[in-house]
Length: 432
Image (cartoon, rainbow, N blue to C red):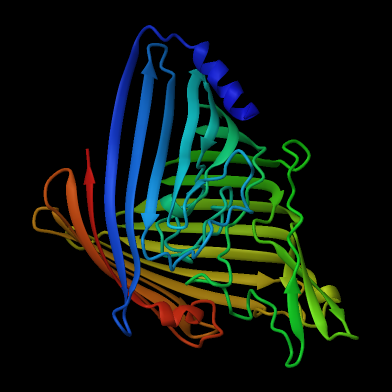
């Protein structure tokens, strides 16, 4: 509660006698049906209320919250798992079928060329389609793997941001005392991980048990620190990034008891240094994008490593091209490669991991009908996901949409592991 107390004190210190309020309420009903048998996978009712208070000194306060219920309870069955959350960030369980969550609660004000932003918020780095490389500040909710929009799957964090603006550049410092990490589905969840890329595979005749992770929980000692510097040039924007933080994925150390033939998984969180850069360059009908990053001492599954884990530095990049040459359309193609500099034969992933994406968007009927198709394909495992979607605006406040989430490839692949969860999605949304 200390974070909320500090923020409320800032609000009380702001001129409150002239306040402009903007509010919006978004309601959504979304249903998903499994492709192979038509069974209902989820039936979600969702509401989001957002309030923005604008003060006469150009400060503002933004807060938003959601209430969500799923009467099928197959995505995340039974009790809501909140272990990964910091105590001040946890959503509230509404029985076994729903939750309520504070999504935003931040104060923002400019002091000359310096901007202060403090509270619970999302901080987005990068612009890649369907893949995260430098977008590392906020952990992700993997309850539906990567199918939920990034805006919804990012877990907001209590943070403090100070941004100093210069003539054509800016420097941002971020302090994140919120010890919240990725939310990984329980073993009974629809999108529970099973691929050998991310889950240790026990030999035949060996039983497995897992201890609870020792999660960092000291707001100061275990906090994350980040820096961003961006510069605007003619037709080009450059960004440079640094992050010292705990990896949001837990490291699954393995200890074998040969007498009982039992492997015990002892999850721990480990820190990394991350250095990144980005470039956006526009010329004519094209936009060229580059994101690159270096992770020092990344922890990886290694069948031959001590306790099943080894470390390697990692270099990764995404090169993307967006083409706007077709009327009311955009075609984007990306290549993503990840290199392990200290690769060992027992690693659960390749030395060079290759992924490509294709995204096509098209607006029709005076921009009331919107179509898009996203393909993510891993070249090493020959698996991936294809996601066509159509949405139609009934009026300025209402839209209906339908889509397909189709996984393919070997069941041991990162994407192929979810081929039994292929689904058709139908939804309606209204904003007030």
